[in-house]
Length: 638
Image 1 (spheres, rainbow, N blue to C red):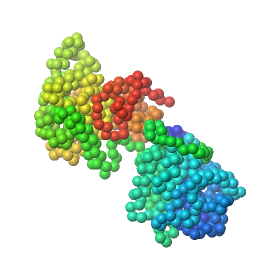
Image 2: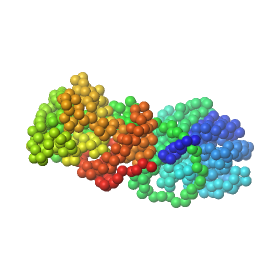
Image 3: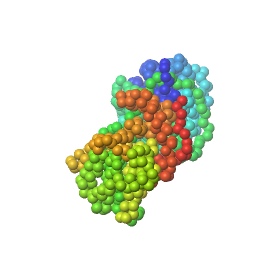
Image 4: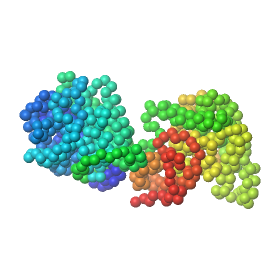
């Protein structure tokens, strides 16, 4: 079969809602067995079928019929037999009669030609259009050993974790999800990484949106994967219509959703990333410290199915929204967070002027725009923004022109202070040859600019606004006690790929035609620290992405390394698929090694970061999200 991608934490699960006929298990089981065959072909390790799928949810008082009970048992035996030759673990809903006379609305777990266990529905709705208590016994507290001469021996209880390979899943049934004390909450802290819900939820206006939000937020609250399968249009339409709604969510993100109201049935196949679930659970102290329930039994349901490929979208730009409808709202919110953080810091230090180094590059341009927003929020004039450009031995004509144009268009006075003489004097004091363009030559310029900014802030009663971004902090691509330092850094948790997106959005939605032209030119300017002189003033001697690698790759590496705790080999595998049309495997391997080396070797710079607003789920602040020894080595590739 080749590579088994379960090694990266993936598990494929399928949900299906095939056409059913109420009270006709013999007909229904044929459709269910067909879904087992499809799941096997799709390499799914799990197959979830709806609540009471063997009989149909809408069989009503026929649930009392001994004929329906006998037909259900025969159909269940056929479905169990269909799992005898391996394939997916099957979860199916059926009425289950036990020896003491009770009948439960149950979900049964079938694998390897046997019933591994059954879970009774705990919360039986008896309001509105629902009458579950008319036919079924309450599943609360039920813990029975079932020994059936035809169906075999298994446990009937909610407190069961079913293991498939290294993954553990548990069940709740329909109304259990809506209840104020959902069993899934206990299942999750007991160790279930995936929750399955066989359901029969009828359709009403706007109910599908509510249902989707409930599944999404449940997966977020319990830090788990959640798979949901509801009964479809084949149910009786006497008073209700069922849509066959299938949903999959993981850690608060909807992975997939089926089309509803298909008379020929609906099907959904998804790949859950259990590494994501496990990382978030390890990292979340609230989850770690939640009280653990007792009495759970782990049931081995098999090893699962080899997964030769993952059918899951891998976003090449994980920090940037891929849905155009989110663009405006997301950009506006990020700028609001940045500007509000800066405005609050201004208020706390007595209405200072803002001092910013405006280079004409991408990062300082965004910080400049944020500073303007902060002044507007505090009803301060643009004259309270002191923009400073400090051309030096390697400053290019293009960026200098951009800095001048930005300040002029925004109505901000630009203070221009050349640093050539100061740098020359400093290098002379050090006894350093000015023609040797090494790290001393480069950092002398960065530190001279930082010194000027802080001294100007002292002179004018100001606050230095930092411009360095998250990507540079991750790589250590900043001068310690140079551009690494500020009074408040508004870009501290904004990666380079997102900065470009924000500046482009601002150009299109916030500025006039001339400002948009200037910002588009900034976006088109090659990224460079401009610390080594070029032969021609119009040229750029240093291209950052040539020196340290493409920021699109480094931002991708950073996101998966920090947000999901992914191992290097998995990050490499993900990147090869996300950037298949842009970077070959050798290039990705090379820059990933650079990223890991620089990320670990440059921690000492992040240990002394100035404050700045957190805008997303990834931040390198040593006071919050990321604390790491300054001396830790990078992880090794397997």
